[in-house]
Amino acid sequence: MSSTIVIDPVTRIEGHAKISIYLDQAGAVQDARFHVTEFRGFERFCVGRPFWEMPAITARICGICPVSHLLASARAGDAILAVNIPPAATLLRRLMNLAQIVQSHALSFFHLSGPDLLLGFDADPAARNIFGLIAAEPELARAGIRLRQFGQELIEQLGGRKIHPAWAVPGGVRSGLDAATRAAFAARLPEVRATTLDALSRLKAMLSRYADEVASFGAFPSLFLGLVAEDGTWEHYDGTLRVIDHEGGILADGVSPSDYQAIIAEASEPWSYLKFPYYRPHGYPGGMYRVGPLARLNLCRSFGTPLADAELLEMRQRAGGAPVTASFFYHYARLVEILGALERIGELLAHPELDSTTLRAEAGVNCREAVGWSEAPRGTLFHHYRVDPNGLIEYVNLIIATGQNNLAMNRTVAQIASRYLRGNQLDEGLLNRVEAGIRAYDPCLSCSTHALGQMALDVALVGPGGALLHRLTR
View 1 (cartoon, rainbow, N blue to C red):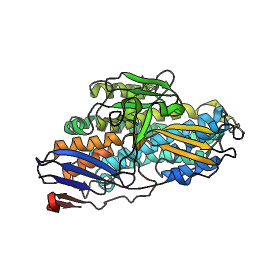
View 2 (tube, one colour):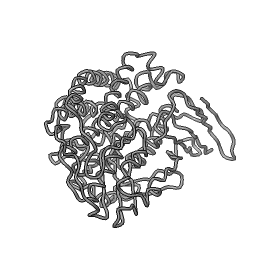
View 3 (cartoon, rainbow, N blue to C red):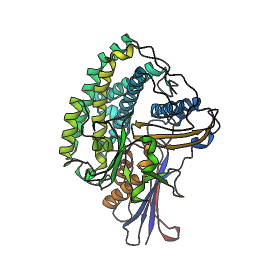
View 4 (cartoon, helix red, strand yellow):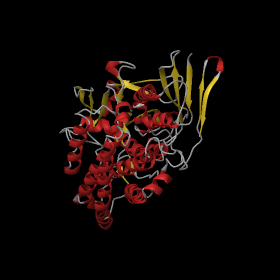
């Protein structure tokens, strides 16, 4: 007897979605779908706007990672102007993106996934949230909040506000960072670095306890895509695209992000508003690839900073080698990236070029089509624009990281359900693990502000003819 499990909404993610799990007549998992039910429309309503406005407009796509869209859009604007921005502006943009990685990864680990990891996947659901974590581990929770605060306040000092800063513009940035402010943030680095190292120690101690989750939370072969620097080290702002397979074989390398269409194509399905990007040479859906912190650490030769390089080496050893193909290790990779980002922030805060007041290049429309990019916390982000001779937008295509992980997230749900679902009975442990498989990718689906705490969840297991087999509500 075939049946369907629906999880709606998926909790503790940024945005709204639901999951459907389809069982065959033998009760085995036949298929799984991660439905994104929101329609945003940014690609359409930006048409007709001046490209100068695009960084400020597209920063509103997301309230969690506005910096990523701000920088990708500004870079597309740089290309329309056909200018090289001043060196100080490049360094300042890099600094803001690193701060964005810190604050977003801290949110993911301590607030969204931390309740599962630190309290247990089978913990009381009434306490398995940020408030329960604060009650159980007040010092750790406080340290996590301060770690995120460090990233947010650095963004605010650079851009004038923590969320949706209208700071990066075509040709550069609006303002710099004075020496006293740089020194104040440098003085805070030891505290947040210690918090990150403590979180890494705790996570490493959990790996044996969560061996089943490691083996089922998206543990499968796939491709990986992202930016790398010219020397093969970790990159988040510039560099070129690299694609590897699950054995580390390089399929594409040195590809300019402006030529992304040579290796990335997009598909759509009638049951989701989220697109399905894939590696073009392998077709759809065979060209499934993953992006984000795990992909970036799989792609790079090294991180390029001492503390992060030591942790990266240990992560690869604990995972059994590189590339690491278990998506549970996204949590591990986020903490390694926070650590490395803090090291690089320290280097940038001491850079003498930041004393420069030359922060913007002036020009007009010199190119009608351009691509901007950055590594968002969740993965590689592309902004592709075409403009008319007056600089009015004629075409916009946005390829976001969550979309690029879409195929992998769907496969992860099916893998988890296959491992944990027994018969027609639903339980909290199963449901939370299915959701946690999605949370491992830290999907960002909207710019909405979400309340902390419990969200409603009504899951029905329905058989042929609409018969209700089992229902679970929380």
